[in-house]
Image (tube, rainbow, N blue to C red; front, side, top):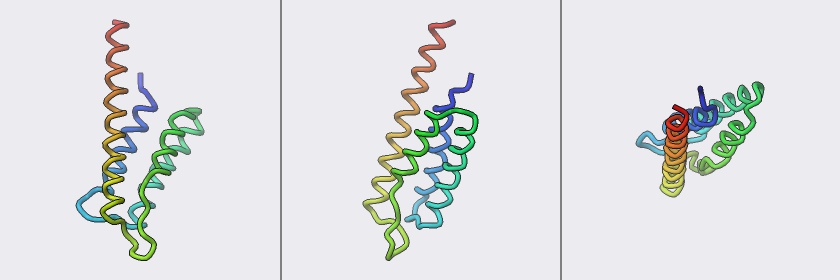
Length: 107
């Protein structure tokens, strides 16, 4: 069985990871990530997976925004982005462990 929240987190991690590609990202890069995650959230909303929608919406809201004058992020925002990715990966690992534990109990 597919765990929708786990898959939403995995999609978010894969998508957000594109912002951490060795250089500072700008508004265009951020908008592409937001569009991908908001599109996924809209689909999940239509099929009734509201908790997964909340997970994605919270992740999008927490993405560090570029500086308006310079049109890109700085060191602080990159550290924040990497910290967010690390937290997301931890959540994914915990959820995978919980699923494995539940599956081992039922078999």
